Image (cartoon, rainbow, N blue to C red):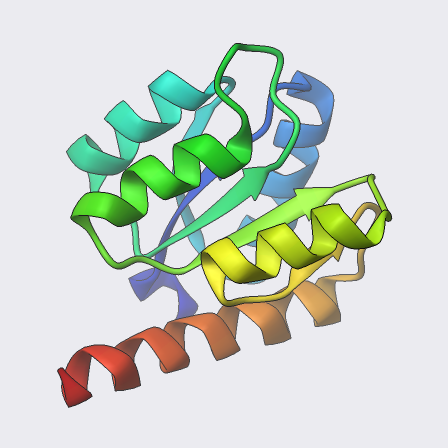
Length: 131
């Protein structure tokens, strides 16, 4: 059933991006692409129309994960789960405010990740049904 869900991974550290992709695929999700910067993430989200985006907050470009997410959410309601190594309250607050979903601290367990994805997809589907 998870293979029905297409996920875009946005992470600028290639080894970690591959690690996330591998974990998502082991949970049965389809990873439709990996973007390593904000502008590419926006472009790929528009082109690939994923069901969910796993977005690193800190990207090595002028566009942060927060900015890329805001840009994407301006034209399409899509669940975005932020990934970060930053534990400061402001980063966590801002991430939850933008995406309305949990912010995941690196590292995370497969169980936590799967539960967050399922919750985000169900929540998004319910919101779209009510609109």
